[in-house]
Length: 93
Image (tube, rainbow, N blue to C red; front, side, top):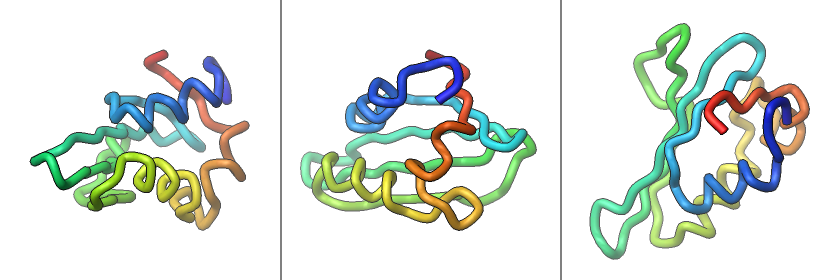
């Protein structure tokens, strides 16, 4: 991970902190929240250039499951976070 520690980045996903990063020239924004005590929502938007819909979304009952889903989903050109993390730049750490 460029400009940050990859383990700290994954920890931020676990704590649902807003996080901005760049992958292959596109800027993304991760956010997570709990709309109620039984639901966890996590999402990634492409913000530059802007896209209308989520790049990735998780709705479930566990932050840990959401963090794992983020790490294993083929979000980035069909690849997972761990397959591309060396190309990612963390821009708000």
